[in-house]
Amino acid sequence: MKLGSRRRDDPELNMTSLIDVVLLLVIFFMLSTTFVQEGRLRVELPSASIARADAAEGAIVISVTAQGSYRVNDRALVNNSRETLRAALLKTAGDAVSQPVTIRADARATHQAVVTAMDVAGRLGFNQVNIATVNQQTGE
Image 1 (cartoon, helix red, strand yellow):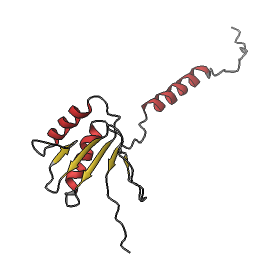
Image 2 (cartoon, helix red, strand yellow):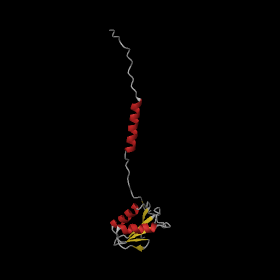
Image 3 (cartoon, rainbow, N blue to C red):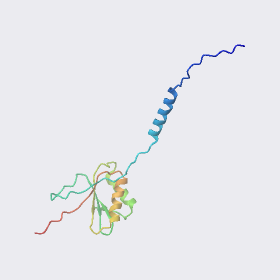
Image 4 (tube, rainbow, N blue to C red):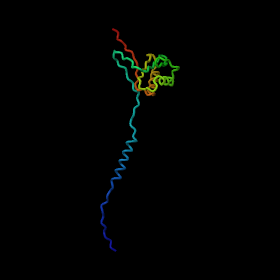
């Protein structure tokens, strides 16, 4: 019996399938990664100039009294709940959430009442919420 040496070929590694798997893993991790998203209510702060800014045409005005009651475009609401304010804003604005909303709060109104009005407007999709202030003239 003749046991001869066989010619040995150099082993070959097929890298194509390995590269395919690595690329699929990279794509999977890129698609499944959650990115940091900060949800903020955008508030346009009033300017401190002496010139008076005129109210925008068709703007919705939410008035907050010292007792914490709300008025939407000078119409008093039945009660002070969030749901009532939400319904009044929906009735006034309809589908036009691109309208600016101005919050006019009494100086003695609670901070919670103002934040509630801002929160309701923000949850309805209004992205331009303004807070009305008065200019204090310096006495000379």
